[in-house]
Structure formats: structure tokens, C-alpha cells
Length: 338
Image 1 (cartoon, rainbow, N blue to C red):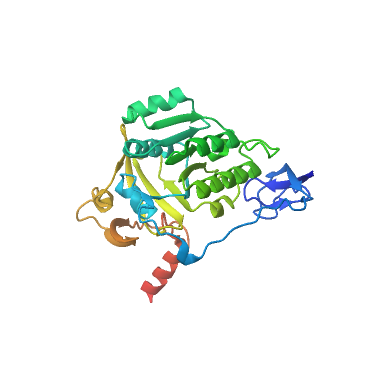
Image 2: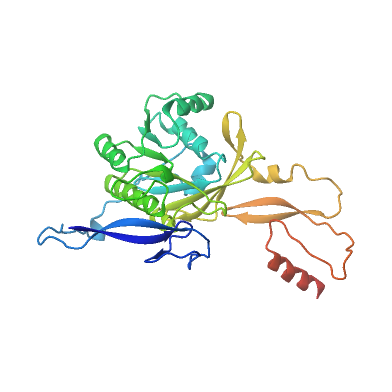
């Protein structure tokens, strides 16, 4: 027997409370507590519980071909060598940063040898077709599905068993057993759980696209990052052509590696030498400019550091930093002064 339970959940951090708050006690966000109706099983039928099974560690076979290479070296570097079979990957970033473009480019390189299912809850099949033609994607093993019903999607995956699944985006998915609108905290969390169980049980890698809110965090509950195996952030300014792909969580690789891309009219192009891109416009023999070497994962990257000093009209000078922690800069300046 199922009993309906009402909870108030913060849409910013996922904090749950039995009563409504104007200000979330978890993150301090105002007017973010939304009421959610959750069905809770209060009585289990005797003898109806499924017994779980376990395997000995030495009985589990080690499959050497557990990764799919995406055909893009920068993306494989961030993923740790490729997409792992049965993994759940979250790709997030600002609107228009290039998330859907990156997925279609993966389809272009992998659909010659893999059956790929592209699920879109935001665009029509005609819109995806137009963007695919612009990127040169015309493979016959790529299937497009415009659907938001999670149960219908997972049933299709179980019947057809594609090799790779893309979901764009998880905020548009609708799980029928949750009485709330798509994009809410409960919907996003439960939909991600359903895709996680599907990926693990069938051994099919699933890539979820996640939007970010105005603070730059993944829209939805923070627990979404704990459900998935890898979290990739697309960083960059929409007014500039360069993009940085960074892994903030990766169960199958390092979180220090970054991938650098350039947005062009034919899609995202890999930047094989980021150092050349960063120092190509450096002026020669200019004061206040120097080259610094920083390690990003397994490769060194050369970057330009600029400093500007001007007279102050106040009694005390003011120090400001862009792209660098202010407290760390104050500590370095104190050391230099001593």
C-alpha cells in the first residue's frame, strides 16, 4: 500500500524539510523551497522481497575492452581513455556552450562501428537533423528519439540494446511515478537513478546533459553528482571561441586533466597545443607580462600572466586579481615584500 508524503525540497541544493521556509536552511537561497508529493511504500508484502546475489571477486571476469574511444583525443584525455561500458556520465555547462554539438560529433566518429541512441527532450527531430547536416553527421546507425518519458525510454533501451545512449537533457525527463513537474529536484534525482540502474544492469554507457543555474552549479540536487560516475564541466565564454572541458569527478580516471576545444562553423575542433594558443598574442619586450608554466594533469601548459600598477587616489593601495585567488596573491606579495 502506498501513502502520499509531502516534503518541501530546495531547488538549489536539495535540502528537504517537512515544513516550508522562506529561506533555505541549507544554502540560504530565498523562495527556493518547493512542495513535492512523494509516494512511500509503508508495508511490504511477506515473501515478496527479491533476494540479492553476490559474486566472489576472483570470479568476476576482467574485460580488457571496457572503453569506447570517442575519436577525440582531448575528450578521451578528460575521460581517462574513453567512455567506460556501463558508466553514467554527466556533461554540464552554460546554455549554448557546445554540449549538444559535442555529443553529435561523438556520434559522427562512433556511429560507424556502434549503434547510438540520441534522446532529445528539448528539440525536434528536424532540428537535430539540421544541426547534424551542418556538422557532417550522416550515419545510418544513429537513431534519434524525441521523448521525455523515462519509463518508455528505458524500455526501448532494454528491447533494442544500443551500444551508447545520449540524453539531452536530464532536466526535461519525466518520471511518471513522481508527482512533480519535469526539472524539479525530485524528478531530476529519480530520473538519474533510473538511468543509472539501466546503465549498470545492461552494461550500456549513458551520457546525460545537465544545465547549470545562474551560480554556475548543476541545476537540480547536488546528489546528482553523487549518482553519476563522471561529471564533466564545459567552461568558456560564449563570446570567445575557445572552450575548456574539465572533469570534476571521474571514477575511471584523473580529475586533473583538461581538454581544450575551439568552436568553429563546423563544430568543435581540438586544440592539440594549448600553450601556443595561450601565448600566441603575447607582446614582445612589454613590461608587466611574463610566461608561467602550470601543470594540468599530465601535461605542462604555458600561460601569460599580466600585472598592471597605477597610482592610487586613496590613502591605501588596492590590489585586485582576475583568474587567481585573492588570498593566495596577498600571501605571495607578503613573502616578496619580506
